Image (cartoon, rainbow, N blue to C red; front, side, top):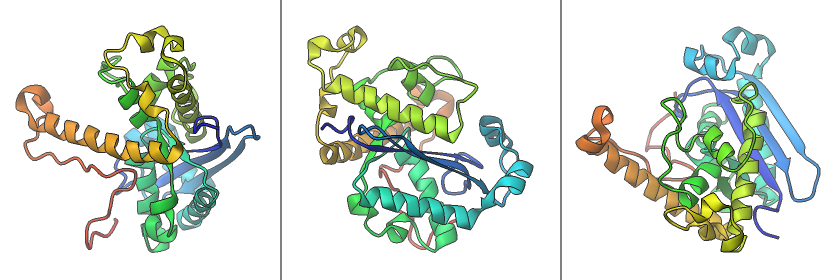
Amino acid sequence: MTWHTGRMAALDFESSDKHHETARIVTCALILISGSLPVDARTWLLNPGIPMEPEAIKVHGITDEYAAEHGQPAAEGVLEIVTALSEVIAAGVPIVGHNIGRYDLNLLSAESERHLGGPLVETIPDCGTRMRVIDSMVLDRQAAPFRRRVSETQGAYQMRTTAEMYGLKWDESQAHGAEYDALMSARAAWHMGNIAHLPHQQRPDWVQKLRTQRFSSLAVDLDELHARQVGWARADAERFQAYLRDPVKAGDKHDPNAVIDPHWPLVPRPQNGAVQ
């Protein structure tokens, strides 16, 4: 059995803002899928306990008032999510999501520190060595590089773009719901894994026409795929940092002191750096 045909745990959060250090969880979906077994989905709605940023509310559509009335206490919900994730890791099931190693897992780690007294590496003591992650954004960047933005508002590797590249029908009315986005990331990852394990001549025409042929680098076992993503994510971070520091290439985004953390899938907390 290859990694894309085995059991996966699709994970996604909607949150109070876009910075994982300060954001609070609003909704979460953890969905066990594939592996020739029935789908097993769990979802949560939390009361973040702080006002959400207006842009975040526009994305997921959950207001402060709704979350306060219908959401469970944040500490209680975070404990349930961390417990559920620990069971997935103990079972050897990989966690799949889109940009999960840059955002979702680090959001949960910050919430774990905030409410449970320590980051994920402490509240799930073996997650640093046993957790396996499949990040559909990292895989897509590696397998199909040099993609251009679709438009001013749709990036080259955001969830919708990735989904549509692999033939998935996108429903904007359901998008940015944690359950929908989690499932779409798992389905996109499946398609990438399927292409990677096909002989070159059987791969889709658009794949055969890519400037580079990297899909075969995904055709490895789960442990090796996780290890390779660590390196790919680091390389992506280094390239983005160099881009931001280049005044010609970055233009209005130029920042000579830009620092992009290269760690993946969990960013270490700075020494004595308490979460807010």
